[in-house]
Image 1: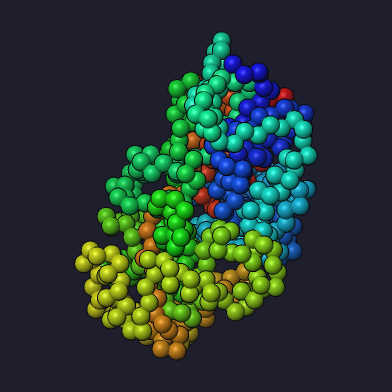
Image 2: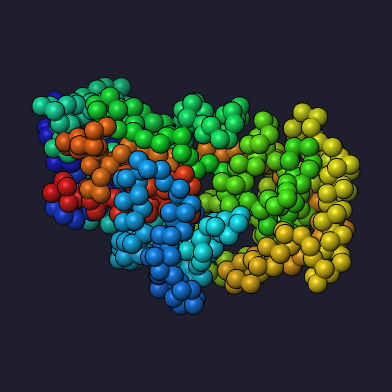
Length: 530
């Protein structure tokens, strides 16, 4: 057995990095292990957009947004729809909403992280039942800036040891408490035991294991999709969830997931089934596999991600089409994450502002040329032929596609005073918020020769985040099924369902994922480990 350690942190994603930093700053000695290569530190956060859910922030106040903990918690609880037994998830939700501004945003600013002055308005809710006000604070530099800031801070601490390409195979028990782990060195394929006074699980959720995602697929969404794209980190495979259960810890709500319906295949995949989450055009028409427009409420995925997934999953084929044109896509299409947002990732302000003012024609061309889920054509009949070639299931009715587009375009042609279409009313509302005005086309018809070519995008399910996980108290201590803490074991971030085994409940307000809740949860684990 290797020499004992003060704290062993399992997982070098953003939750593990933040937890490690807080422990080091309180004088603890930490061994941080991860299966990743050094250049992969930060996990999925390195690839993410880096949006933050914060309440009553300085950025909101400067934009004239009146927010409060009371309003935000009201929104959270309505969307979460907690059940009677969700005691710890609800406590975590209350704690996070109350402390997000200071223990997330202000804490990160101490390490040089900054946010855009204009706050984005994510998850309004299809019926206006989501975020009452804008709360999505976008990190300048994307998720990569968060990871870089944490890594830079960690380098100043001599009490840290990092071991890459090391995988925890099991937890060790001594006299009823977790006392270390069995670890495999994947560079030499050797195994050793390591004693530790405290073990913190920060190994992510289950989204990297598509078989596990299918086994826990929510029953209200029908049968699990045969095809699911990978949007999580491939090491977030649920192994540590199973190990925690083996030693007596409680794992809850794995059927609660935050998967996306607006995903396409990566043009240059780096792993099997590699998918990307789009930020799809608001002015595009969303059609089911047959070509029928969703209704009576038109489907606009950016308003309510879970509603979009529910509508997609009404059909066993579990995909849908969005039809737009070059002018709309150039103005409105974007991709979530750091990879396809180089101006933000590299903090190039002039290039970013040009992208806001002029749109992103280079991005659209890249996906049209390289992504197999994008097709273009000059006419609707030609577009329908190419759409059918992508799916090969004979589901699409070309005449229905033309009818739906023509009906929408005719409504626009009658003029704004006669708009009788809920999508157009929502576009009007989007353009009233300055965070969306420049990124939303002004009532643009689809089949407009001056705005072509036409573009159709097939979108499908992307496995992303786990809203359930290892149950913890507010000190991040792992709990048994009887509610008692399992001595020596802690869990943080997505591994803990972001806290308490499911602090989001059944749905999320966005911007509250692993990198944010890690800050709150590690505070508890630091106090408990001290």
